[in-house]
Image 1 (tube, one colour):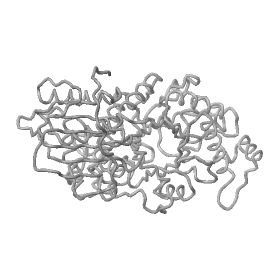
Image 2 (cartoon, rainbow, N blue to C red; image 1 turned 45 degrees about the vertical axis):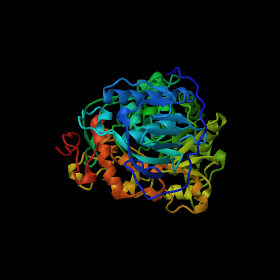
Image 3 (cartoon, rainbow, N blue to C red; image 1 turned 45 degrees about the horizontal axis):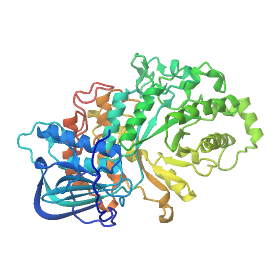
Image 4 (cartoon, rainbow, N blue to C red; image 1 turned 90 degrees about the horizontal axis):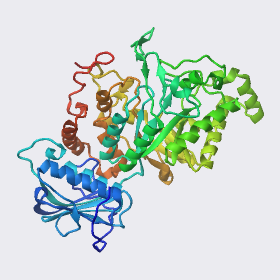
Length: 558
């Protein structure tokens, strides 16, 4: 969106970055790095005029216009973005700010935002919006207080990689739901969307070179709804869905406008039954295979003894790279059984040709998976991309330049950092949002595992166990939502909110800024925002577990 704004010179003021952590707090999640109250006056937003520096890029101007439009709607008055002026709400381009930094200075007669990029502008607006009354989010409020205290906020992220994951293989979610998910991420200043697109239970991305992946691999006969009984309890309802390449591009573009990079995951060489059902010749036995209804680990995986397997992988990745500009491509690498490889003539021939041997640490078959990882990594590196893999990729030898995603606790990330590999911390016990929201599991929707209440998520520290000299290898923190038992939009958001509030503070705040009692009070404001926007969420943080009206597996709370 372009705006006709005259160019007005502005002297660049002090840089945004300051390494100071005062004791003051303000009701914003994630808590800003620096907060200083500077006076007793109040700035009246309702009487303000929005103005901005025309030197901002078009996306920044678009964010400012959107902010202005929401204010106009909430205040029931016509507000127009004007050229940069002395008073009112001013957005100033400050090239001294780093890409995701921003500052907010509130005085009695003006509010000044400084940033250098669209992300900085967006994050500043997210912070301001949390200080505004509910009316800003569309709630009718006759007595809304539109005044803000005199305060200076300087803010920047602790980690460059701030991730949130969504599994759409186990249960497919529409493009509209994915975009709503991205909206919530952006509001929490999260900048990486890890999109788990393929697994045993469904292939969700159109690959034109291999059309059967979606013709066959995107469909399953039914879904397991309870795994704790024998025989398994299934729902008897077919499940299907995939994203066309046009839809993928629309999500990528939407995310980019929110400052979010989409990191696609094509999980290999395990978790591939949906692909094997479509192309059985890629397996060790040749099939037949069937898209799985079960959860768990399947013995049937890609056959690395066949050259056509690598032709398939490279063909898929070619189209993935065309669709996703992300520097990183996630290649999974987790939970890959070697049972079929041990008896497959093609795999054993490949092992012999490579001279792989079982030793005191690993089997020859484990080293065969390293060969797959290294070969795929080289292919992506040759095309200017990097790989991320789950921490199993550390078993054996890992090629230089790989990034490890530590999910089986923090151990994988600790080991990766010590070995000189970059790592992203996503330990199951703290940031797996498919775990129960509360200890009162009988009142919760059925979940895949044990309780992970918000206070446990909040307690995680990414550097624990990491030697100081290796901490630079910790790129950031991510939370994961696997959807084995999450089939609807209300359940989806219930599982992530308000735990995403806690996640954002792990990713953004300096440890000195974290305070659970302060955070608990600030969450109350966030829940009102979720109410206004129509999102479901857990109230377990206030001792009220359960999702009222939920009618999924085991009934949940009614």
